[in-house]
Length: 426
Image (cartoon, rainbow, N blue to C red; front, side):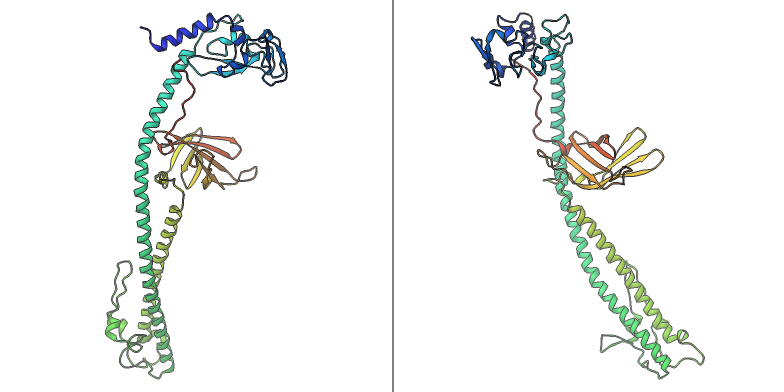
């Protein structure tokens, strides 16, 4: 018993070799246009411009301005010949190619009256086409499976980033409180240093005998015991002030001694320096945390897709060597080109999604790269295509300083892949 595929092959040969009584009339016409060519006494040009006897259709003489009376010959300069190509994809060719000795239709129907020995190759071409489409469908299925995994990972990663942001914001609040406390302590230490200096210069013994530091606490005084126990923890480091740093005596100092050499002033100066150091450390920690918060907020503000499926690309880089250049794509960040000599050039910084009509997440735009010698700056358009792995596949420069990249990733796979028109059955 013959298979359906073999019947298709036999029928295609029969149609080509044997034809029918009206084959001259219908040759070069698609099935959707055959209603205009039903044999009758007259034929109306499809553009409605002229009415001619039906026997003048396909008579190798162009009567209609639109070429519709000669679909199967090369008589009309703007005519089209329809290749049925049973078993493969049908398509049109210019009618000027009909019977020109070159095989254009895989079913050889365009060379019905020439000396060219055309073979019907539609079945083999269709078989390869179907194998390709089947391979694409398998790739699509696997890509969609991987995409679902990446979506799940993206959701978890998004939640982790949000939690990390909340933690950093809490740390910043705690550091803000600590920062205000250390600023207060520094102001007190600086004020006591100034008071000590004035007392020594005045020689009036203004420093009280109770061995105290002026403060806003306890009526404006800090006792000797409090000063000795002063601990300033910054970045898990601690230091206790000793007796020689905490003790401030009530004396005028030795004769001939400058204020900077006086033990009263030296102790006050050390306390002021210590508080300044502590404040600087807290300020640096506060600034670092705020920079981390700002950086994380910028990352979270990027559009990573409806299900955060593109989030995993942030922080990753993909390389491809093309001739003497190494190209590096870091999604949502930047693109560079590095020559074998070591010169690196920016091809653009992350800008936006191109937002084409059919798929918002189909193309990435990177702009404001390094200046081009012709003027303007370098830019790159990255087209995302479906694949089972994430990789940079190709780089081209169709115009000066304007680059295009093909970036393959499972998250670019869409649920529907439109199959090309291949005749698999009658």
